[in-house]
Amino acid sequence: MVRNTSESNLAGFILLGFSDYPQLQKVLFVLISILYLLTILGNTTIILVSRLEPKLHMPMYFFLSHLSFLDLCFTSSVIPQLLVNLWEPMKTITYGGCAVQLYVSHALGSTECVLLAVMSYDRYVAVCHPLRYTVLMHPCLCMALASVAWLSGIATTLVQSTLTLQLPFCGHHQVDHFICEVPVLIKLACVDTTFNEAELFVASILFLIVPVSFILVSYGFIAHAVLRIKSATGRQKAFGTCSSHLTVVVIFYGTIIFMYLQPAKSTSRDQGKFVSLFYTVVTPMLNPIIYTLRNKEVKGALKRLCLRQCCQVVSKLYQM
Image 1 (cartoon, helix red, strand yellow):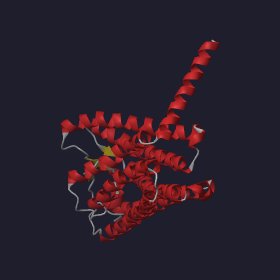
Image 2 (cartoon, rainbow, N blue to C red):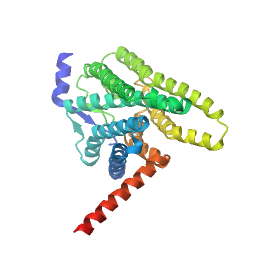
Image 3 (cartoon, rainbow, N blue to C red):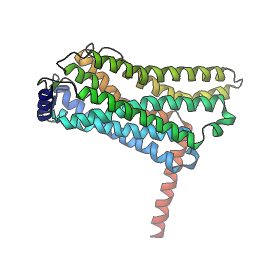
């Protein structure tokens, strides 16, 4: 086992990715490059607006800025290597590079699972207890909840990624994927992986089923509270505060659950790649769009910031 692991350390891995579709690779390179730039622009904008606009100094936008930062880090841990492999004929990644990508991406993905559940609690308090919202969601609690999300992601990747990288690969270096992921590396192992698959399943329950259940319960209470609102305007406003988060939850958890809540050796080789491509590239790009287009406060803050910047530029030009 030691010899096989050291062989992997020396040789690294070959990320086959979309090698079976040579004509598609250049198209994907251009498309993913555009989506990556949009992801950086959109999520950076959300972070800056949440920080610079005083009216957005609320728990909802505190958590939203954490989500945007997560998406920036997550895509940056995956997409640059993916773009290199799509463009270059040599699709290699060192063992160390694969390990770093595995640890970082898994930690960030797990953190996002918990963070989305925390955001659902924030929406529950905002809709069901509006008069006590600022008291219940005080800054210390928000910081504690965000810390729990980050620390839980770090803890799970230290356990799960370490167990995965300890598997012997017996000279198998060709990874039929574009990213070093736990299910993909489990497939590559040359020993019985029942324990690893069981551990992956338990972790998936804790970080997927439990948060989703919490979110469903939260939105059950929210729906009950909204239906009790007599004013149509009030119901629309309450729905508007939750619709963006609910849309992000459905998109994110739908793809993640499909990928992780099944035996590691059961997914078809191409199906897993395109599902992973969706939640690593498309979802982080959609999040700021969803929150911007469906949120009047964010759109208003963007307009005020743009107007403020324009006024400052005009003022400087006038002084010159």
